[in-house]
Length: 275
Length: 275
Image (cartoon, rainbow over all chains, first blue to last red; front, side, top):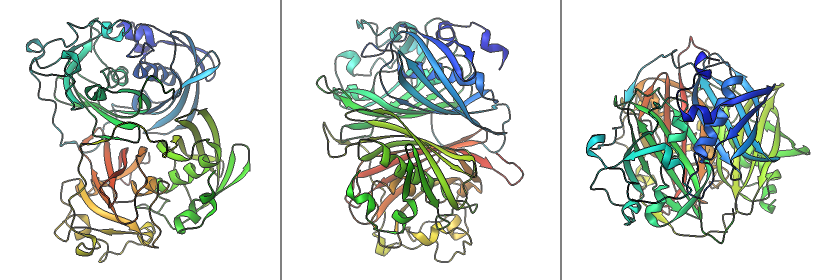
């Protein structure tokens, strides 16, 4: 466990802190400050809480890949996180976390950690970061919108090309793709532990088709620690069928490095249909 | 459980069959007929075995999304698969499977199933299938190669553009991307249960960089049941850093429909470095 675990550097650290109760059981306080569309705590936030629990249990220090299955919406308030360690290897350590509230499991996470300082091998980058205007030339897409209950919008700020159209301008584009900047509003810099929040912290791309979505599964790869600054993001859905869709997300730091990518499988929802 | 569970339609069905021992415990016989590069049973094959175990336990009939963490290489021979059901919903049911051999867990899978006949909502396809010559105008890239121990190459056949160059022609291209056809050699048609094998059944794209890889985590989305025929496949790695790389895989059926996509996180390996 690194010393930084107990340093308070931002609201997100406070709201993802877990306390160890006993072997394989930790306690979290799920905050209402990260509620997403629908009014429930954001899935990426819940995943980040689970990763903090695994940080107490795994022998390697840095999150590498995590898969979360979202079973039921979580609720603000106390949660128990039950963990178990699957394997402690030299390069990779893997464990599981189950977030339980009121006796019901809400999220199940399996995650592998590594030591990001033990870098070996070649680097190759065939992708390109989003082509965005500088943040001070971009606009806040939420500035004109009232989003009651979506408290995550009070925690994270967004910047988009002033020319971009979409649900935020009242003009769903039919094209489920966006590029934009993100960062914490409180000045806390994004780190490896908050990237799993950020990959799930924009509106679902399918909103551009007038559709809502519930995440069934989200996998995130944390590829590097971001440098300080804004996060350049790209989200896209390409395949919508059978009531499901994928959503791919990339995050690049201001140094032009890919720091995280994720893919989720979402269930298209309408008011009449519980999952 | 559908009647088809007990129909033998191909070697792959035989080799992924599981027997229920008691509540939450099933037995599998891991075959040596699906060994991959490195001489161990292929990861997608092991995932498919775990999905057959969950098929006995989950209330919905069709695999939808599965995440597998590969903890240790498996070995041919008997395996126990321990399952638990996380949630049985109306649209989605989720469970976990742990494949154990000789007292050691090899693979941990969390998967969600659905009812693929309960199709709702809109369809949209923004991607395009691989542009490949017809299979009878394509060539078997393995025809001239000796691949001792890689038994999966005896089970699956491949077809590529005759103009394509790469490790199969002794000319690693430096470009970790391929398009190709795949199908079972025994005439068994691919189905929803074998797609998790196929997304992992080609050589790692990083072979084009002269690198080997061990899969840490693989997530597959099964998006539709393929129609009979060849599978049109696309594999690509874009980001290689810190000793890790992602690999994305798409499978389209002969009807031009995306039937599966996957992403895996791989650990670059060299002979001196155990994971």
